[in-house]
Length: 128
Image (cartoon, rainbow, N blue to C red):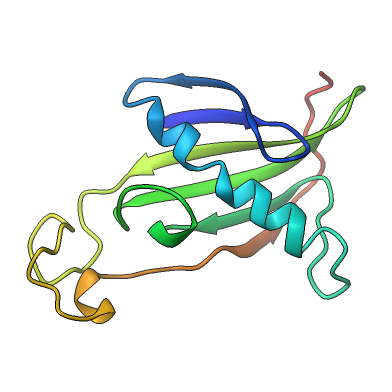
């Protein structure tokens, strides 16, 4: 698992890991996507405490076994996104372990979830 903190613009500003730190940097496109398309979108919006999830490698990352979850937090200086990147062992691809070199279409690559808002929580307790 890798944890990162992203700026208001979606740039990684800090990461810590018990694994591969590059996964935190590779997750940076998702906060940028959220800010660009959903921050001012009235049907979605981005508020403190909102939680977003995805595993689609087209939005950052090496493959669909890498799942990402991020939460909008605000502090004294600016709004930030905190995110965790977790490497799953299996995602339903046609080959065991989630890697799918034999896949001939997207369905063989296993479960793919585009970024989505999965929750609205109470605001984060951290004041940065």
